[in-house]
Length: 209
Image (tube, rainbow, N blue to C red; front, top):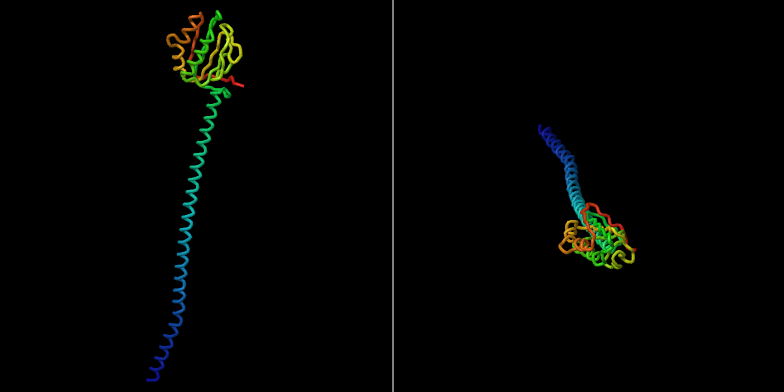
């Protein structure tokens, strides 16, 4: 009986040791795997943070490029607009838009240089962007010369009826020509007529060489 009890104790001890020896590697493996998972998670978190930072930097770069492109486009548009305005003023570019068509009848050949000069000045003062008379572009440096019945602009002879075209604020220009003692009245005093018509699409296409 004592031998049997001792054998049972010995077998029980051996079984316990065997179970511990078998269980401990699994526990170690579990612990090792847990540490590996922690490292992997840390690495993934670090990578995610790097990716987030790269995405934010890329977005900022795109926004900067977009803003820079818009500013560049605006600068180009402004430069083109200035160049066009200068070209129209100096007569090297055509102009088109709302304005006036003025027909000056001079049956007696009595309209003097001063009346034509006044007409050009009144139109400019009222905001005309571009003017041409009988197919001759009128700019700041243009010279209106000659005598009644033989008028010239920059040496080019004109012939009645004089066809004057002006691109600009039509209503304001028409008022300027029709003021008391103005161009229309001056033409009438020498036996002629001046008729101004507002037009939605006036083309001034004569150019200065």
